[in-house]
Image 1 (cartoon, rainbow, N blue to C red):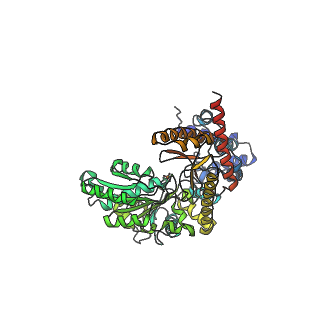
Image 2 (cartoon, helix red, strand yellow):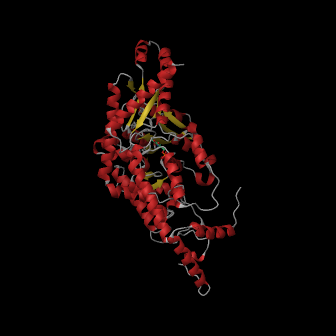
Image 3 (cartoon, rainbow, N blue to C red):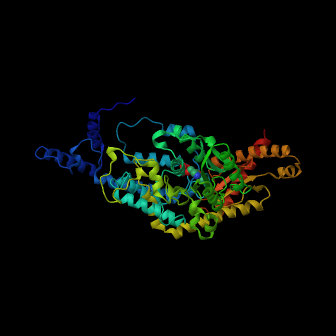
Length: 551
Ligand SMILES: Cc1ncc(COP(=O)(O)O)c(C=O)c1O
């Protein structure tokens, strides 16, 4: 354990000053000495930053050096990310050895910090690489990255208008923009969150409080009557059962309704499940549709689900964390018909609006619903403003109190590029996924596993020798054996591709088949990158064959 006393810091400050060798540093030391001399005759005032030897302020020259070097590092990163391996070529042990050090007692020189940051870059997976297609992760943009820098510099905690007047207004504006850009509501309310999981949790909490008919906030679920049930397709994101767990509803109360052959929620199964629970004395309170599932990008039949929700008086939430931004693309609008009917909608700017992590969003038509769930009284947060705008507090609308200024990166990204250019990037991502599907369908050794609904393409590698076996397989047992072998092979391919550094795919399990999954929310991806990725998969498969043959 390292213990450091306050005196150590003071001594350290002096030692640090004496080790600085530049002329500018000598000048700072000289100025500091002059200042100390002047302190003997004058009282320190607010602007005398060096009145405290422990001050963490730095000189103007140090500030300029720090800014210039870090901006250069970021510029170089943006310019060179396409040439890097998609995934670090360092092992876990090498990365541990590089970074697992005790905390430094004394500050390190700038050059050393830059070397450390370069090592961090070299030890990373690069979501901005044009052949990164894993999970649901997009590149960031310079506009978003610099916005985050500025947000951290100003560092407002966006709890309320009182704490962050402009930031609060910008967040409200961004929320309204996201509502109108996606066709949800031109006058949407809501909050920015850390991501889709937090937006979904917040939505489920609001839904439960609005529909429970009991004062759950005060008395807990124990006094809220019969168990309450939630409905979603078997393709729903894991954050929904997790939210039900966190809220004490229980994962089992999330009814996973079967999906159809396009991986969309089957509405007749939904009605059956609701009816059964009602007959059993349970209390259905919420149905959740996906506007872009994480596995295949399927969009549930939103309009039909909305009318079922209305009929049974259920809260209707849509998880559009991945897919909802695609509603900005004019030829996609029709697929999102019914989006506007949801009581709440999650969508993540840090996915398909290309802003840096973290930024999710929960949109609502009615802000009173959120207030019902979250309004809190406490003396130390009491707002003494009287105007409606100036007494606004985010803590009445969500879970967090201290909150990052997430809105700035969304605001600046949209202002810098404009909605039209962002929609065009989304449209092209969709076109890339369709191109990948065409290439897959045209190649005898690949099989497309799901229709491309948005920008996700799932496929598997099927060696030609398996094709004839699959054609000859007459019963389900034989097919299951073939699938099990292909699942194993494709899992090995995925791992080899991921660690090879030339492309990055993740996976989806689709009707028992292990699929290689490409989620293209990457404005750098070109058709050439798609072609290269398929070659990389083929080469990985050949390499596995060679290894197996040589055993
Ligand atoms: C459909 C969907 N919902 C929710 C989430 C969770 O989002 P986050 O990772 O931002 O918490 C994801 C993440 O990929 C998702 O794809």
